[in-house]
Structure formats: structure tokens, C-alpha cells
Length: 386
Ligand SMILES: Cc1cc2nc3c(=O)[nH]c(=O)nc-3n(C[C@H](O)[C@H](O)[C@H](O)COP(=O)(O)O)c2cc1C
Image (cartoon, rainbow, N blue to C red; front, top):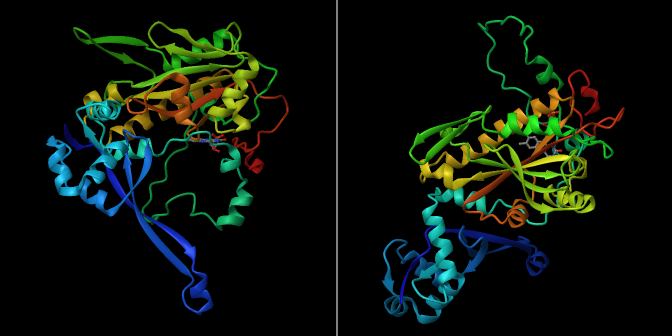
């Protein structure tokens, strides 16, 4: 059997603090710290405690060159190598370790920048709910907890500043100035089908398909995209869209159609929205929601092992969501976007692999409740609502 180290591995020295009561009684420092090593490997998707001996064996193993297992056992001990194989931090070319090896190969084949793979893998949420930190505190509560925030702008010397003329009017003004984040969606209202269709097409649809090779195409959308690759896919959770049965769909940007993935009844759709949005009830009522999922394999096809590629995925999703907001605003509806989502649960729901797909954000929109104020509504001219 031959072995090598997994492709991406980071080791972190973790600290646990405790009160040393004996020291307290003796009148010296009360805080005691104990440290241990934690291995973070994106292909495994879980944190693993490792010993100093295992650390040495990992440090001595190549991530590229295969080596005979027996030879490594002689150097580091059979138990140590067996445990590292079991954990999946060492990979082997034989059963029973094939599943781990396949995950390691997927990571190698997708050209992730190692630090980005790590930030992505270990930044995902499972079953997080508002009770575990997602409540939306008022600014007043934040001020009490954290004191004054840094000023709203960077104040560089104004000496010699060029005063600019007023912005003047423009055709985008109505959408730009009406846009706001809704937390006041009307549970009785639905989104008309033609409104949903325009929104999906103008925000996520291909306005043009360009052939760039015999079997290669790029899409032109209304938002910009890093490298013109448009790696963000739109999955739709329809709760109340006229003519669309509640459920999960994939929006096909060229065919301009909703391809069904899972039919749901209204209660199931509402529960799914709450689960996806980490129990943010104020957003979950939105009748039309769009899950933005980056296809890393498409992006990293060009941006191989690239420092900026993961950031570009997030920027792409941000552009799409602002276009979505403006289209919702045009239709007289508030919208929302959030990254506070249970992305690992969304992957499972959609059958996605976190190494090949990065769930980035969820946005949504719908008619607002008549006459009710949003929870934290920051509308132009109405800032007293904060
Ligand atoms: C990246 C991003 C993440 C956001 N996440 C949340 C969120 O988790 N929950 C929420 O209620 N609003 C969220 N928002 C909305 C902001 O709170 C909102 O944009 C801000 O309060 C300003 O209000 P406005 O959009 O009405 O101008 C998010 C906005 C952005 C751009």
C-alpha cells in the first residue's frame, strides 16, 4: 500500500482556558491554558484533534509523492499511520480508504486556493438558528454593548477638496431611491408570474449566449462577472408565486424556465425558508426566494489556485443581488439578501458538493404589508425607524 498526505492541510494550535482554583486559593494567576493541535482539511469537512506524534508524521509526508506505507510505519509507528489513515489526513491508494481518496482527488481537481478552500469549508453553517446568535439587535442595543462605532466615513483632510455638482436626476433614480431591505413581507400576498419571470430573467437570465469555442459558451447577463464566467446559479424557493407550485426549482438562465427539484406544500416551503435563513423570520416570509450558488469548478477552471477567485465569487453574487433588489424595487416590492444562511444544509437539500459548489447568499422579495413598518427599515427620509 502506498500513502501520501492529503492535498490541503492546516494545523492550528487551539487553546482552552479554565480557572485554576488551586492557583486562585494560593493567590496567583487564576487563568490556566491548555493547548492542542487541530487539523483542518477541506476534503474532510470536520475539525480533527491530532497529537504531537501525528503532527510529526504529517509534517514528514509529501502531499505529492506516494510512499510505501511500511516505510512510513517504520519511521513513525504503525499505530500513528493507521490513525492518520483512519482520520483521512493521510490518503492511500487502496480500500478501505477509497472514499477519502476520492474527496481528496476532487479537491485537487477543482483548483481551489488552499486558504480559500479552508475559509469556505469551515465557514459553513448547519442548523444554525436565530437563537444561536442571528437575532437582529437594534442599533441602540449595539451601542450599549459595543460603545460608539467608528465614524460612518473615512475623514481625510478636506483642504483643497473639489465640491462636486449635485447628482441631478436620472432614469435609475426611482429604483435606486426606493430600494430597501424588506422585513415586512405580506403573508397573504403573492408575486405575479410575469413579475417573477421578469425578475428572474433580468437578474439571472442570459441576455445573450456567446460561443467562444467549439464546445464553450459564455453568458451575457445584466450584472458583471469575474472573467465573464457567470459561475453563480439561481435556485428558486417559491412560496407564493402565482402559477408556480410551492417548491424548490433550478432557474435555467438560457431556457428561462423553472426546473422542479422538489414539490412542497405551503407549510413545508415556509419551514424550509426558515431553516435556510437560520430562522430569520423577518426574511423567511418573502414569497420568492433565490439561493445563489457559485460553481467553483467553472470559476476555477480559469482562476486556478488563484488568491482572488473566491472573493470574485462573492462579488458576483453581490452584483446579482443588487440587480435583483432594483428589479424588485421597480415592481414596487422590497427585497433582501443575506449571507447568514445554513449553507451546508442547502447543499444537502440541493444535492451539492461543497468543493464544487459554494452556496454564497440567499435573496428574496415580495409585496410589503400595508401600512406596517419594517423591523429595521432604512428608507430614505425615514431613518428614525432604526
Ligand atoms: C451581504 C449582506 C448581508 C446581509 N445580511 C442580512 C441578514 O442576515 N439579515 C437581515 O435582516 N438583513 C441583512 N442584510 C440587509 C442589510 O441589513 C441592509 O442592507 C441594511 O440594513 C441597509 O438597509 P437597506 O438595504 O434598506 O438600505 C444584508 C445585506 C447585505 C448586503
